[in-house]
Length: 188
Ligand code: PRP
Ligand code: 7HP
Image 1: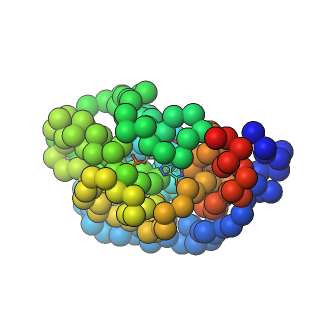
Image 2 (image 1 turned 30 degrees about the vertical axis):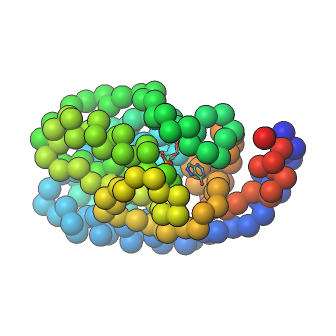
């Protein structure tokens, strides 16, 4: 792959800066804390992409929270296209029956991942089940998803950073951006 050792040198454009992301996380944290005031909430993070968002969002909440982690995968290898086949790589570690559950995602693209997860988690009988996503890319939606909290609506571009990967790299960038076309092309 035509990639430099300097991750940031592969970036063509920053779409969301670190400070924009942090301001949005604080805003979402305040909204969610107000909506669930006086209640307990279970956050279910959808790994790996949501890891930085989950870590920041949970610390922006002022209500009592439990956390659990699931890992699912639908984008194989270094692809920018969903395989449409959602695989559970790591399941919940505790029951969510009777609990108020908020799924924490980094991005909703085709919606196939969340469509699968919603059905799966509803089957575990939580008392409520809602979705918080940092990024929403509605242009590529294949299935309708009821999203309760959205950080940013973004255009139809394959983004990296703040948890989001291309070929498993770039997740550790503190901003969300797009790569130079030759970096995406080199993986084809
Ligand atoms: C990404 C992302 C979402 C999903 C969204 O996960 O984190 O879970 O794709 O795409 P969709 O709406 O088209 O289904 P991915 O499968 O790449 O795994 P990762 O989080 O480990 O990168
Ligand atoms: C998955 C995914 N991963 C990284 N960047 C994007 O734009 C993505 N859409 N769906």
